[in-house]
Length: 370
Image (cartoon, rainbow, N blue to C red; front, side, top):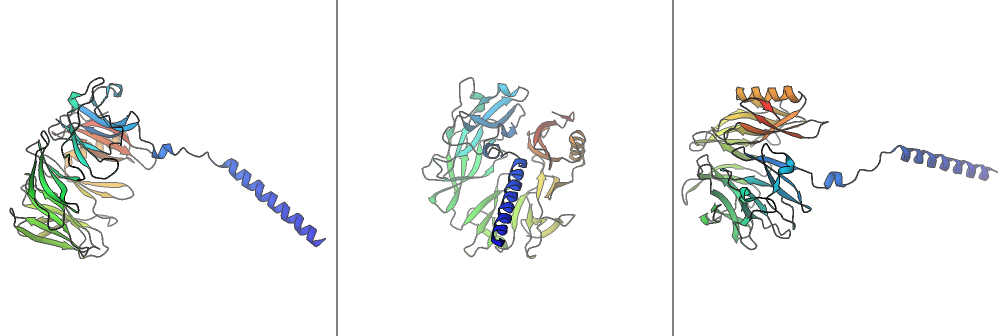
């Protein structure tokens, strides 16, 4: 009798568990389609052309992510594709400084040997796709972009690993012709070449075999000087030259193991390092410097916390920022992500912890947001 009672109770317990499970399943929300997370967005990567006449963006074309362009004031149904890649999606792109070309990188069949391609978007038309010229057309060679010249708008500085697959030699590259000129052979494990605001090669960062890192000053054709070192457990990197090109911003936490990184200015000649700023709330690493591309002056410093914080050094730009917040909501994260050469028009991104990103064009002259 005891065994029978135990069996009945066990069955009853199982039935109760099954009923509770079915009730819980009935209350579960439906599964979300994985395409919502992993499919190509309808529109992404928006940028203003340097003269402000055009808006470019990425959108699927023939089932693959490609680059599109439209006049700034035209509707999106007037946009035209300027690439028609079907082998692989385009990951990103940028405008040349004069707005004559759109450039992007593409590898072949996923081999990660990225080449640089250039096209003239003004050649686009109904059923006409501009020719995308491969301007680093070298088999089995990966190109890296280091600097887009400020004064000669047809000039870029790139790295190519043709001579040694492990390290990139430094070249100048003509966008219009694809002409390459070797500037420096990389025999010292340099991983980055850094130019000043006058397009002169001034610095290079180096990776040592023991995992430590070094920053070198490029003094001449073959004259190089070690100016800074940091261990594999520390962080350091240059972050743009000051007006005059005699000093550069340096972000580092050297000497403070696991402490937060801070912003300094380093004199490139005397190597004197001057503290500038750290997180006023002492919560996060130094995030970034927003410099005017025209003047080189700091517009704001940025810290990426649970919400991005911006500390403005330019009162006029801060006034525009506060105006945008008043229009879109004080709880929004505002980012200036693309601007015209004259720094009049900016593409602005706005999002929050409950709102996905929306994008606007902001006019600094009349303070309009659309």
